Image (cartoon, rainbow, N blue to C red; front, side, top):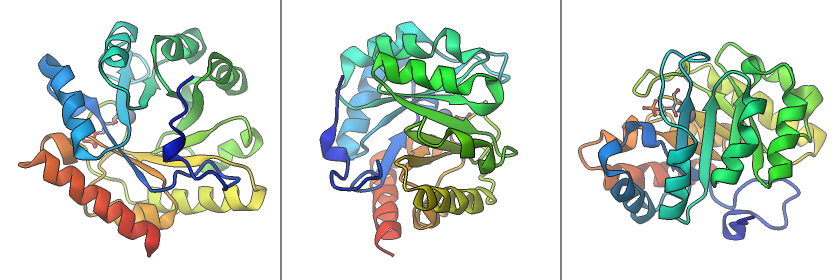
Length: 240
Ligand code: DX5
Ligand code: ZN
């Protein structure tokens, strides 16, 4: 298993990364040049690669699957963060770890057996995450604390890049951060959808540890500068 120890605060009982992490989403990248897009992410200072896996059933879009993750694995040493927007995630979650994913997240709404699926990801050697859609309350996770390594809060309805940020997620981040302190149990908080310079600082201030950004990076006029600006805004949010 790849450990990426440098990203994590060793003494914390939490799994919070030492600095907030930026995870550019390949969904907004140029699929004809994925290798170059990975080189770009590495050079930009972002620490994680976000991979959106959609099945056309859980969400109304189809993207990429295991063979592409295997290829990405060969082409970068950065952590691969696979966000599974698929029904019946138990069937595939461990396979994504075997294909090279470091983090695998599954939707609460897609799985009546979350505990089992999360365990299958950990058993395969991955970090296991639960994703909540905008309408799913964070309280849905209270009885699973300890069984996941991270929570991904959606700030758009999953399925497409380039949608508008739903600001109510900020309150969800705060509630999740409070839950983490109350329980004293380690997990990190990720936010995905409509992330931009307008909300990155606030999200980190609220307790987010990792922000996913698709269009805000890849569709920017100067993608490298856009990533650098997001990283600075996130760092400022952590110290504020
Ligand atoms: C949406 C995906 C996101 C998407 C984010 O379902 O989960 O990861 O790529 O794209 P932006 O940042 O453009 O909203
Ligand atoms: Zn995503």
